[in-house]
Amino acid sequence: MIALLEKDCGLRRKAEILRWIESRGFRAHVTELPDASLVGVLGAGAEVLAAALQALPGVREVRPESPPWPLVSREHRPEATRVRVGNVVVGGREVVVAAGPCAVESEAQLQEAARGAAVAGARLLRGGAFKPRSSPYGFQGLGEEALRLLAAAREETGLPVVSEVLSEEDLPLVARHVDLLQIGARNMQNFRLLAAVGRQGKPVLLKRGLSATLEELLLAAEYVVSAGNPQVLLCERGIRTFERATRATLDLSAVPALRVRTHLPIVVDPSHAAGLRELVPALAAAAVAAGADGLLVEIHPRPEQALSDGRQSLDLPAFAGMMDVVRRVAAAVGRDVAG
Ligand code: PEP
Ligand code: MN
Figure 1: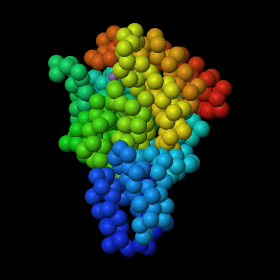
Figure 2: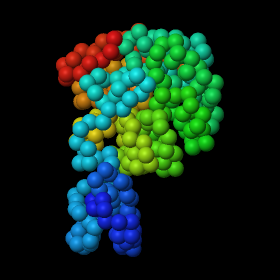
Figure 3: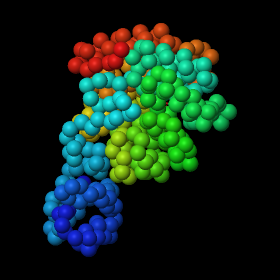
Figure 4: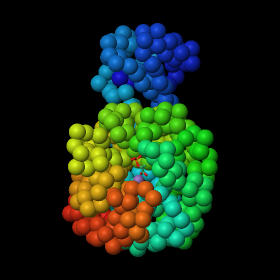
C-alpha cells in the first residue's frame, strides 16, 4: 500500500503520520517526489489501515492496492526506464547482448572472448572477477587482476564491462573498474549490499535469486532504488524446480509478468538457467520473443578448458550463430540487435 502526503504538510505532521503507521506494526518508507511525499506502508495486511490513514490531516491519497515496491512499480512511472551503461542504452528498441566468460582466467582468454563477443554484435562484455562458487575449493576468480584485464578489454573493444560484486567490502574496488555492477543470484537478498549499490552511481544488474519470487526480486530492486540509484536492470536467470534435465528452470513468464509490474528493463540469462550450451541459443531466442530487453550469455574461446561453467559456455562460432537467430527473432518482434 502507498500513501501520498501533501508536500507542504510540514515536517512535524509528516513525522506524526509515520509514527502512527509504525505504532500499528507496519514499516513506513518515505521517498520525496517533486509534488508529494510517497510513503510505502510495508507489511502484510497493511490495507486494514487504509481508511483511517486517509482520514489523517496531511494525507492526500491512499492507494490500498498498490504494491509494496512503489518506486519500481509501473504505477509510479508508467513509461519504460532506460538505463545507460557507458555508451549503451538498455530498455529502448535495441535488445542489448552482454557476453563474455563466466570468469576472467587470463589476458589471452579474455581478449579472445572480448573480440569474439564484439565481432558477433555483443554490446557489453561480461567477466567474473570475484566468483560466488558453491564449493570453497572451486576457482574463486582473479579478483583485482581480472578487473584490470576487463578495463583493458574495454579499451581495446569499446565494450562497457559488467562484473559481479560479492560484498560491500569489495564495492569501491569493483565500482572503480566496471560500467555495470552485477548482484548475483545468491546475493539478491543481501540487503546491506543492495543498499550499498544504491548509494553509488554505477548502474546495477540485479539477478533473481535461485528461489526468489518476482515480488521478492522487485522488493530487492526497491532497496537499490530507494537508496538513491534508479539505474537497475532485472535479470531472470532460472529458478530451482524439481526438474533435473537443466541446471535451473528458465522462467520465461517472468519477462511479461515483470513487464506489467515494473518500468525497469528486463534481461535474461539463458546460460545459468540451461547449464548446457546446446540449449542456450533456443532459450536466448525465446527470451527475445518474450520481450527481453537484454541477454547475458557466457562464452569462452575453449569451453572445455574453462575454469568455471564450461559446460554452459558457447564457443565463439556458436555464439555468432546464436546472434544470427536472435537478430531474426528480434526483427520479428520489432526490436533491433547490433551487428
Ligand atoms: C554469473 O553470472 O556469473 C553468476 C554467478 O550468475 P548467478 O548469480 O545467476 O548464478
Ligand atoms: Mn557462470
